Length: 223
Ligand code: DX5
Ligand code: ZN
Image 1 (cartoon, rainbow, N blue to C red):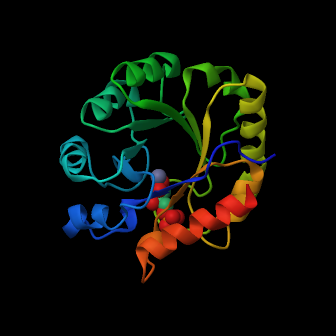
Image 2 (cartoon, protein in one colour):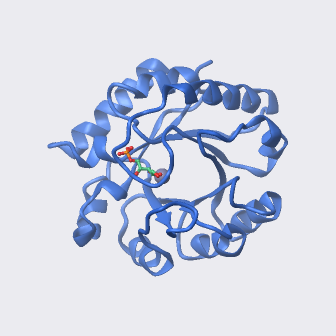
């Protein structure tokens, strides 16, 4: 079942040069979002950046920030990322204690609220949360690092989420993150994803705007 909205590309700055983040954001001005991976070395075994850096990025970015929180206690921190200037804030279902209250707090702070699922986490027990959400993120790698291989077995979950969204009738986006590239994005779009995170496939390309345009075209053709 194809996605009903135009595909959106969200390059992950995890694959960019952290010494030149303002320039790296400028390089993706033709994208729809900038995906910001926040890792705390507890929820995942890697440490990236936090609120002060997101605040600084929000001041200079040409595209809205899509913050993916791979942290413990997102109930406490997620609304602060919205306040800091993120336009979308994603928390992990494996970490959040009260997903409804947290999603409402994110929305009240002016951002879109999203819920992420690690590869081993089923979606079905949480389908009732869709009215509280603006996006569901289906991880297509184990969260923690860029540059990993796409997990094909997650496409069934993408299909399941898309079907639940269609039944629910609301405008909930379906995002995929991890190993999304020119050779995998069509399968994601066919399965019903409509927001595509790509780190190495964008920042590893010689021509970044061309890589973004290519991914968008491939997703559109497959939608
Ligand atoms: C992984 C991150 C991803 C990562 C994707 O935990 O959530 O956003 O940056 O990188 P690629 O596209 O290289 O797999
Ligand atoms: Zn991510």
